[in-house]
Length: 479
Ligand SMILES: Cc1cc2nc3c(=O)[nH]c(=O)nc-3n(C[C@H](O)[C@H](O)[C@H](O)COP(=O)(O)OP(=O)(O)OC[C@H]3O[C@@H](n4cnc5c(N)ncnc54)[C@H](O)[C@@H]3O)c2cc1C
Image (cartoon, rainbow, N blue to C red; front, side, top):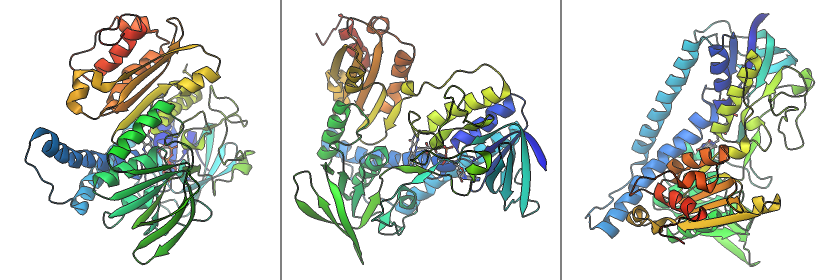
């Protein structure tokens, strides 16, 4: 039996960040991955989707150039295979980068499927070698001196009545490998992934219907975020149906015919070339044999830590990171990076800071984008806070007018000049603007602390500065 200080199962963002940090702290680390290091985020999630959304932004820019700025530009066509080639090149380069980092750090990457054989032992099936150098196929056993980290992530959720066939009924995984761009899409699910794909396909010229069962899209965000995002998507021609449920879907030769019960109780028939199912993700634990280590999943399939400050399960030495964690973890890559650092430092016995999930930013990279951190207004009130709220349109600052896409900044703070509890942004480039707000919320700043710092003019961030100036009683353009 081979031994290591730490065995990490799963080489996605949660797993490889744990491995890199643990190795940097001098631990001998084995990382087991059955597919490709980088996981969902790099190969099927964050990176390919954002590459595609960047192309979508360029397409939208051509229309804006023509319609607003007198630039006589026209769009000939989108060459999907060229777009895919660029996207895949970005993914491949990042993949090589992650592999190189792991090799450089001395992490032993083992190719194969891992299952637990005890609280400190793991069996790997189908090993193709250590460090990618090839080697004996078959089964190998490993024992962990300090601990095991479960980082097996998640996969797309589907509905019992809807079986993705990868062609007409697709998940976000399938959508990446589609042979062409569809002329029409029905997106089921108005969370971040559904909204991003709806936005992408609309930019690419498709007829898009977005169906969400809750009474608003991005339902975990502040209600004003949902309102502004819905308005922005509708303005772009996306048919947003909230409070609506899929009754059934029939796969036909040329697409899918879906019946949807609308919020008004009517039955609507929607024909689309493709139905994209984006109704959430489920944790992956199959084949892991949690029971062998004395563990089990919760009723939703997550592996819950007994100690959130160490992300350690009820079995000492077995830790969990990433999408395998239940809420309040967020199913986001950057949350899993932070969780990986915490677990590696905990296993190395060096001081570490628990992850404050409430202060982790959340972004939807659609057009318009949304970005937020901290509590929504409703959450703050539900927790008993008396709050001051200021909402500022992005068009109230000159750069917002230049962009001409609407949007807003909303700040929720404790009444009477107290702590900032949440910041919520909608509009162009807000994914790049949320960083200052995460420090504001994370450092328990008050509006007055922020208001004394000057924002560059003219920028979209000025709207954030202005919103805080107003809350601090010093508003220039807003009283
Ligand atoms: C379309 C889409 C867009 C997204 N966009 C964003 C975004 O913009 N920003 C963001 O922060 N997050 C985004 N996410 C979420 C993000 O991808 C996940 O939160 C993140 O990948 C979770 O990392 P993880 O390490 O927990 O799991 P994963 O990345 O899923 O990695 C788990 C790994 O474990 C391996 N594995 C599983 N079981 C075993 C086993 N038994 N043995 C060996 N290996 C195993 C798998 O092969 C996989 O590589 C997006 C997700 C999707 C689907």
